[in-house]
Length: 490
Image 1 (cartoon, helix red, strand yellow):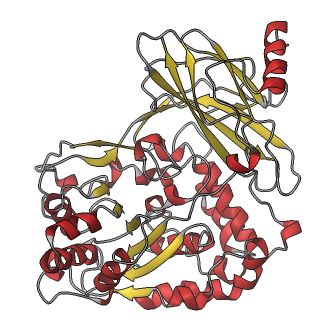
Image 2: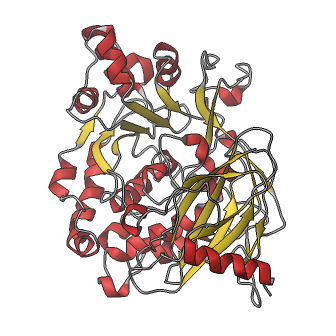
């Protein structure tokens, strides 16, 4: 049972918005639920080297209403050195075309299949740096330059699912044909996320363009990479949402033409998908801040020490050069999964702790797998028979300041669900983010619509990140988030 003091605090919170005089006035529900402009994305894929590229394309097209796809380029890699397969990308789009009318019922922003087909391009059918240099331009590299020079100030994300040499050639051409200041300006618009290094052009790009925003687990040691958390079977948790049985039930079978082209797993499920998961506007993801953590994992900016003598870092049997500058790369989370109670409190903090770089991704895996399953339902079901994500709304700003030792409230009473589903709430501190090094206790039940926190004692200004996870009780259950950044001053 709540203590009377906590009850009175929550009542005051609901009535007044906040107890702290330092907190700015509450924002409106419309402001709290506003969606930013979609992120621009070009994909470079060695499709047909592994079935997982086709899997990732099926998922990506289901999010083409919220991610602005600007190019789909077939490339080579260390696993597919002498050919490219743009026709395989087109095959997935043709399956999308057959379900497009039903997708429009769920969101009118889904692009026309013809628009997507026009974005399919190809790089050179050569491996790595052999495809980079004077006279090595391709349809794919030209397209990257075109999109980069377009009159659009949004960043241009390049998700690299295979080799990066098509991007390397685009950068080579820019450096050879544009003034240095213009090259710097254009490189400043690029955001690159590569799935490890799958040719020798990635290290060249990072060394040659030291100011380029670049996310990568460098080298060929896939076992140490963050992205492999998408398909890692983790002892001690429920891994069912990445099982072959789950994929057959929720994606492949009974979900129309698009689900039918999702191939069985060969080496690993959707190893390329983490390169763009952070672009989905779910309330947690902040693409420009990889260190804040997202569905695509968490990354920190530093220069990794790589043992060039370790064969696991080799790409195609060749050792990669040591990194010459900081890059966005593997970070580590300590994660304690919440547990569900059969009786009593529905959700509470767990006890078992997991710690490594892959944790930063798989901690969200059930949420993004359920989200994928719901969107597969959108391909065949009417709106009234499918689930849609809830809308978390705070009754206060998502960033505010309090004094050390002062109590403050967190409140999500304005949250709703478009399908009228019942909602569950869970509040937690994301300790790896924020400057404050310690744990901050949430008073009362973490799964209430409101929470009360007492600011810790600090000697200088410190930030603390809290995450609100709102989950509906639809089938499958869908989650959305709010991140609250609290600055504590002495």
